[in-house]
Length: 124
Image (cartoon, rainbow, N blue to C red; front, side):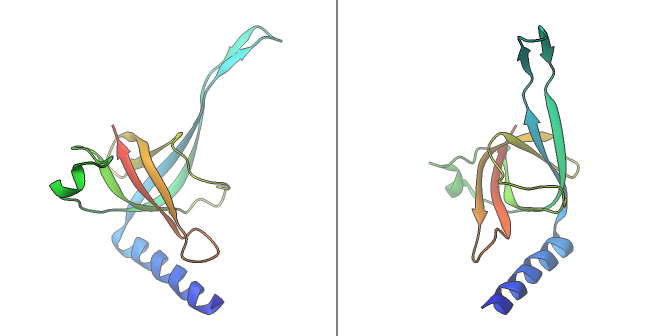
């Protein structure tokens, strides 16, 4: 089973390399007021490298879903080695040649013991 999972992970990586495009996942940590020093800390961003494939969708997908006209949908895998943890809706995605977009929906795809990639919908 472990060998089958390793083959599946290699297949996903190969497809992302061949058909994907560079992307960035940005985690925004909001600033805040520190009453001890009476200062306001600015927001900070941490950027992780990723590979992404946009998937197509039709008008049938738009009705009753989170996908709206102008949104992007697809899959991505974070390739930056510094990333640990989970992806959340507090993060943003920048696809190659596109603007920074909010993640509106994100789901891990785990056909085995670890997350292989994330499915996403991003808005403006």
